Length: 330
Image (cartoon, rainbow, N blue to C red; front, side, top):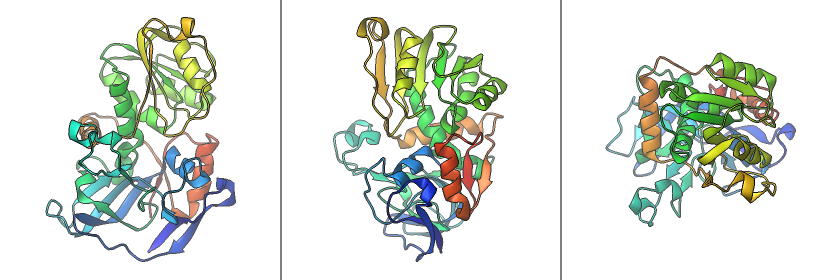
């Protein structure tokens, strides 16, 4: 099968992902083999490709927003022909104290799709059947793919930030993940304020229902009850804190973040404001989010691309030269 293989992390402009012919994986007990129908490109893929996240498996096939058709199964819960999704969290030990207390996203020995096991930048992928998600019939594969990470982890961010219906919420950065939670916030009757560096992203946010959109260094016109930072840069966290009301929460949705600048505790954090990180997702997060989106009229628009274009697409992600999320169609 064809696959975009990462043999050694390197700057993405050097085309660090190489198109190779590799064997089709054989599913182990409890696993399924999927024919990849669509695989979304995520900012985390860029962090792995460029070495911001330390290598775990070398070489590795990236890609963790996967929709595929079951071709073989060694698990009783899956049937040939089922259409299922795979997300970033590809497995857990099931025995650590976090797994035993419904916090599997914090598992001590997790398996990550496209990082510690091969992912979906390929024609086929094997996966733990317990960590696959039935795709609702009214969600096309290309549409469903970015929901599985950008959307589902964004949805978890709303939970971590304790967003309540009707509140004022700030989104800092307006890439794929922020776009995927916008319809949820509007469905909940929230007022959404978007801060992002790209003028076209500001315009897009207003078109999609934001009450206000402006640059990252500009304070929102009203104090926020909750804020979520999506841009993987530390100074954005300070921008979010500046707009946060007392008792509010800033949830940092980033698997990798550079240094957060020093800041004044008395003016930015005091008053029971909170900073929280968002780590991975649980199976419940993904299942709940997919069901919620399937019941809404909104569907994400995407930019399709082929395996041969993956390096260019990742470079566009790094340089914010895209508006709609990229989805690979093998």
